[in-house]
Amino acid sequence: MFKIVRNLLLAAAFVSPIALEAQAPKKAPMHASDMVAVTVTVEAIDSATRTLTVKTPGGDFVDLEVPETVKRFSEIKVGDQIRVKYYESIAVEVKKAGEATPGKKVEGGITREPGEKPSGKAARKVTVTVTIVSIDAKAPSVTVKGEDGRTRSFRVEDPKNLEGVKPGDHVVVTYTEALAIEVAEPKS
Image (cartoon, rainbow, N blue to C red; front, side):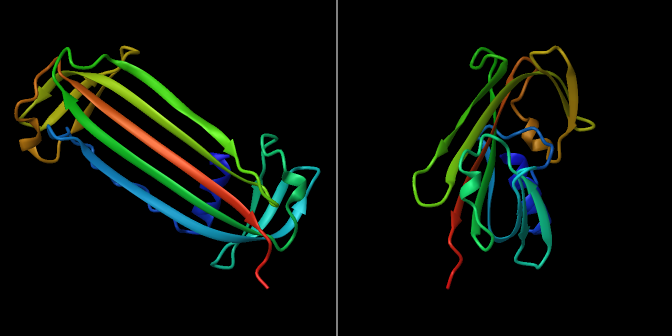
């Protein structure tokens, strides 16, 4: 479902991805978010391949493959309007050694909404905690290690963000995305 929306939004040229700089976070959590909404019109339906051809507000035509998880696909008709809202956010926080456990946690689900036409919501939240292995104040950069044992280095844009941060501290990154889709009759 997320693949469909990403293709749709990219084609509609409405997506403006969150531009978080690769930097060591400040002691207070950093947060950035973005929400995109677009309405497209169903122009053609290929039931055999479960493909919708939609027209974006910019006049482009986009083919969307609809997964089997969309149970009410047969209720979508040519001319229907599909309203899509996509939200994503990211939060980054540094915690002292012992205040967090390295690892990854994924939560989420899909909710189908009742109504005359198909609609539903999907959400996912991924939280990853990594350990700071080393800090290079001259570069400036920070190297972190994930629970898989792999290390990665990131440039720090503002060296002040490294103040008070030590090897052994943890970086907790929480990424959230949510999607709402509603199919409606064409406007008269």
